[in-house]
View 1: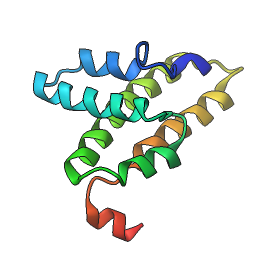
View 2 (view 1 turned 180 degrees about the vertical axis):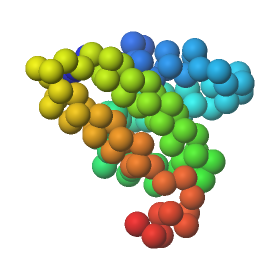
View 3 (view 1 turned 180 degrees about the horizontal axis):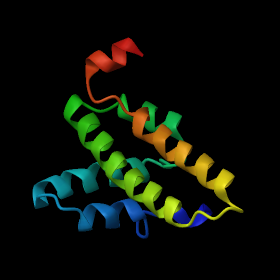
View 4 (view 1 turned 30 degrees about the vertical axis):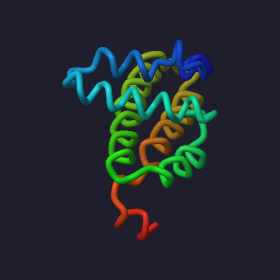
Length: 117
């Protein structure tokens, strides 16, 4: 399960998931740009707090693109993890799913959400 989120953006699954998604080219470009910016800023997708801090430095549109890109990637990773579940690793699978879900909620797209947290 550790190889689900390589840290190098040259190999990062998020970029691949964005590239193959059923999205317009413009949307893909925006998602790739914000993901690469996060990774180039020493961001790690295994750290929801770091992701949330990075998101606060972005304008609302950047937060929305980051949130959508993270959701796209983490949803794909959740499906990958679920497909590898066995009776022997079910606890690890569940913990991994929780971590991906935490990433999905780490970024607030609107300023209103930021003030409520």
